[in-house]
Structure formats: structure tokens, C-alpha cells
Image 1 (tube, rainbow, N blue to C red):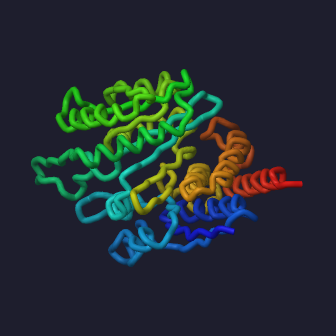
Image 2 (image 1 turned 180 degrees about the vertical axis):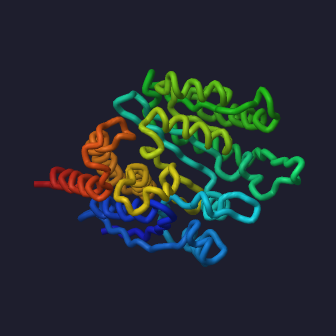
Length: 353
């Protein structure tokens, strides 16, 4: 039986509760087929307040070289700030740059609404590469938007490779990669589009599509079924992924993967919601779907599918953010138990007789 070493970063606010829920679901998915050995790591605003660092000592190296993958809860608290005024404890920059986890993969899926696409967001460049590096004073400030050929080539190629294993857009079944930019305004985005066109030529069986960012935001709302895979710069991707989430049940339904050449971590798309901490009312769905993405990444496809099938069956009737009535009185533990039982029944029905 295969065994995997999995890092866990509980984060802040509702993060520890969500991680506990996801671990229970992961263990249910693994039962009898593979084992998961979990190791806890400190990270987030609480860690920053205790130590002055966002991440525990040695954690980055362990995530990079020891764990098969890492599951992260939401991190950061609105009131915990760095001296420069930005939010402290947010781990995205530390992990993405430290691990060179260049690809942010954001699936947006709502089967009943005919929505099933993936937004591929470059994670290490773009406007956010300027965090902490801009120039300015109290009169004016400037941040740089960075687009490089190597960074763009690898993220565009990742998007096309992802499209090769998908079944195409919901509306027409066409395998399609949409380049989203503002190349009509900024030269950095013009370079992104130029490189996209070059890489697209390597995949003649996949349709290359182009939209400006403002038009893409509009299309994601009025006809999301036309999209299969979208690829874009960091800042644009940050905004569009949340636009997409609004059409598919909200951020509470949306997981994210952050993948590099040698390490990967998985997380919910939403924040730490400290007001909901320890109330047993947080929605664990995005965290659990992130756990399913983790299983997919390590090659446990059946376990990942068992989790997704359970979510499709259980969550719409229990979660108001997913469009259903609040039939479980907001109980995180109750919902977790329902998911685990559904997965166990799935395993039992699939077992040879």
C-alpha cells in the first residue's frame, strides 16, 4: 500500500477547523487503498505575531523537499499588518516565490449551471512581483508589472497541457485556451500575448482564443460555458478567478492549486473569516475540494473522484452559498460527517464482491 507524507498549514481564523475537516475527508478517501502521514507546520498571522515571520523555521525547505504535497488553510488576519501597512501573515508570496510555484490553478465548476473551466494564473511575476519593491513616498508611489519570456512560456505551456486532458468547453465541447490580457494598453501584456501565440502553434488541435481582461470579466458572467482553460497574468487572474467564483456558488466552493517544478500546495480560494472561527458554521467545501486536487496531484485519482462525487451529492442541499437551503443549521462537523459517510459508501460499493 502506498504511503504519502503530506504537509499541513492550518493558518488563521477558520483555517484550523477547515484543515481538520479536510483531514477527516482525506482519511475516508484513503481508507484501505493508500495511507497519508500528516505533518503540521506553523504559518500565518498567528505565527507572525509570535515570531516575526510568516512561516515557521525550516517549513519552506520541508515543503520543498520532504512532503509529497502540502494542504494549506486560509492565512492572515485583517488587523495584523506589516510595518509597510500591508497585511502580515498572508503566505501566498512567501510560498509561491519560495517554492517557485508558478502556476495557480483555479477550477470553476457548477455542474447544474453548465460551468466547468479552469483559470491558470501566473503566480510569480506580473504586478504582484512588485510587492515590497515599489518606489515612492507620501506624494506618489509606483509598482512595476513584470512579464518575462521564460515565465510566460512556462505558464502558457501549462495551460495548453491542461487543455489536452480536458473534454472542452461546456457550451460547444471545443478544447480551447483563452489568453486574457490588456495588450491594447500595456507593452508587458503585448509580450504576454505574443508569447502565447508562439506557444499555441505547438498545439494546433487546441483552439487559441484571445480576450481583453474587461471583456473576459463580462463573458465569464454572461456565458461562462464558452470557456475551457484561461491563462493570464497574476493581477488579472486574481480578479477574474473571484468573478468566476461568483457564478459557481461563491468563494466557499472554489479550491486552488499552486504548482511548481518540485513542490505544490493546495488551498481554498477564500480568506480566514475570523468572525466564523470556532462557531462550527464555516463552509469547508473549498478546503475539501483543494484536498481532492492534492490527491489528483499525487496520483490518487480514485480518491480524488470519490471526494468530488461526495461534494456534488451532499453540499448543494446543505450550503446556502452553493445555492441550496441551510438544512444542516450551518454545522461544519455535520457536513464533514456526511461527506465521510458518502465516501465510505462509495468505497463499499466499488469493492469487489
